[in-house]
Image (tube, rainbow, N blue to C red; front, side):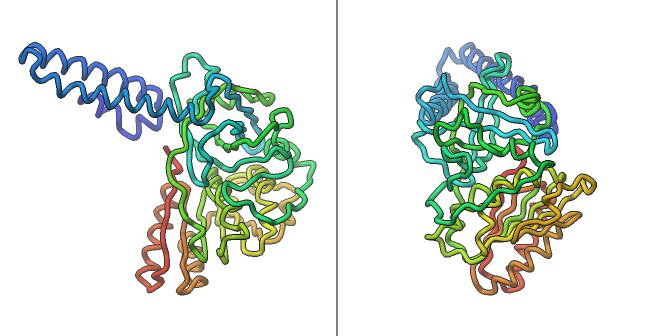
Length: 369
């Protein structure tokens, strides 16, 4: 039990997740086996009843997770995802068909993904937040809730952003129905292997999808919404935007403050924001924190509602400005980014509550798992 605790520290889980996973499972089995025979020897099985619930709970958990996989696709052995890698933005896109899914996707939820092409790692699963759901057509995506009546605008065209356009555009070969889209930043371990699969060209992988998990924040109930996000945390506002800007919604303003490292990543994601930025209620404030030399041509003239700045965002100032603009109306502050950014958004929200802006609610989405 002490070894299980030692291998569960965040530093080990973050840097060596596979080691943590294998040792955790192996040591848990060893602990249960040892306790069973320890009790069997000294009490002649009288106290074994306290061992069995541990096993029953574990088996029940495995059964429920298996049922979630079946609910997503009863042909679980034949779920195929198309993965694409964009070198310029260092971003992996995964499209998973949802035509047989029995549980409707909701904005802000996440799914565990298993990749079956790696026999050594088929047991591993990792959580990813759903970015959005595409329609069978290649030029639009469908909201995760009531459909918006806004027409789609023309996409941006630029020779320097063609690779990013190819990444964000759904593959025609796979466009036989709606697909869930995940935007993944590759690091090490699972995401690194995912990147290697599609490093030179798009590839089709057999996957298991388990979910959805989490809950969908009721942002439609607020008059004003502020998203404070970093990097791939942009998936959170992407999943909510079409929902909260639909014709049935009474949201008055939506502001997104997004910190991103590379212009290429920004250019990629802008393809998905463009249809939604036609709504005058929505504004996007982008802060490019590192790459200032390789600016895409299209970003010299950003679309309406988009401002592009260099340097890190002033989260405290953004929250204060949103609170002052909202006045006594309701305001939802949603954060999904590095710990420092989320901490600053939380502290600023609390400070504004103390200053008398009582209509503020703070929500935080997972950025690191």
